[in-house]
Length: 81
Image 1 (cartoon, helix red, strand yellow):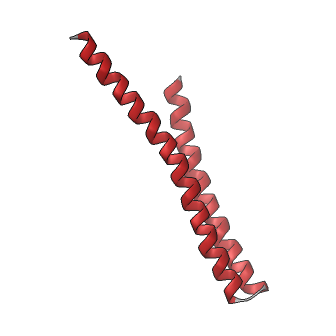
Image 2 (cartoon, one colour; image 1 turned 90 degrees about the vertical axis):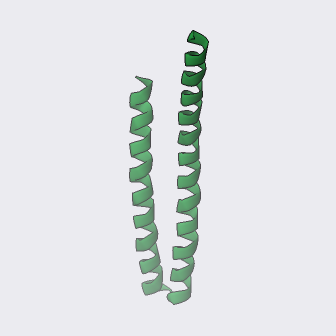
Image 3 (tube, helix red, strand yellow; image 1 turned 135 degrees about the vertical axis):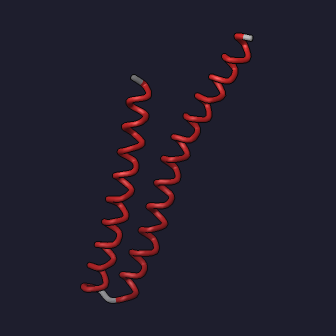
């Protein structure tokens, strides 16, 4: 059951990042239309940095989980010998 939740969380993270990047692009276009080029560029750059940081943190958490699981499996395998 745990693997189902982790797998689902990975899918949610991927969808969330796609939607976040889409929102950044739409926000940047909106800022260019309403405010000008410079604010739109700021939205695009800082929104993209935000998406990378959030996505990186979430994938880091998932990576820690997978590394811990593999380490536990390897220790169990060594202990059974």
